[in-house]
Amino acid sequence: MLVFTASWCGPCHLLQNFLADPAIRPIFDRHFVKVTVFHAEHVRRRDTPGADQMLDSLQDTDTSIPFIAMLGGNGKLIVDSVRPVYGRGRDIEYNIGFPYDPNSQVWFLEMLRRGAPSLTSSETQTIRKWLFQHKGN
Picture 1 (cartoon, helix red, strand yellow):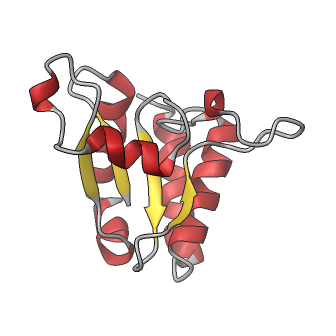
Picture 2: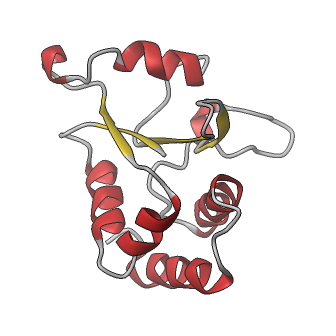
Picture 3: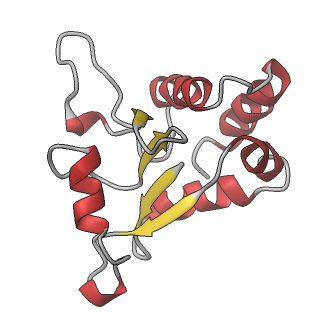
């Protein structure tokens, strides 16, 4: 699980808080290896080396952050946080970033299902409940 983030990004901090929450972290630790990539920092030397190239290899144009990519053990992309929109296909404007709203939460849970098929229904319910209760706060 690659997470492209920046120190100045509010939604990125929300995502990091979510992933660090004691109710959520064990689920992600069990199913994912999380790698944080710093990208788009105001001072470029703070970016993770190769972040631009890594993002370009996953996404054909610039997108907002946080940007999440689920990779398989072979390093190939399984799914990312750009939510397909009926009639538009892959439109980078639909990067869910932090899953605030119901549509982005549905896509986030689908990403998790694809990235970790062994995720249990109980774990999925814990994640869904957390997102509903916090609604981006």
